Image (cartoon, rainbow, N blue to C red; front, side, top):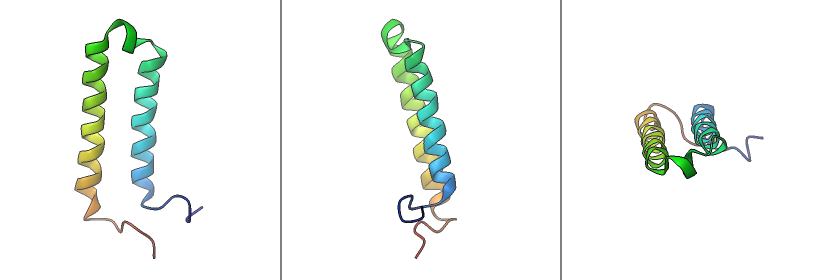
Length: 65
């Protein structure tokens, strides 16, 4: 599995959690009834994911060689 999932496990876990949050908002039909709130939450989750990856990128080894 190391050949498929490159990078630290924490990055994949953060991606899974953020995808789960956005998917659960879609299941509640938030993108239909409260579109502005949905977009704000998607932007916040994406910004937090990007901040987490950029902040911890220097501390972890990105690719296992």
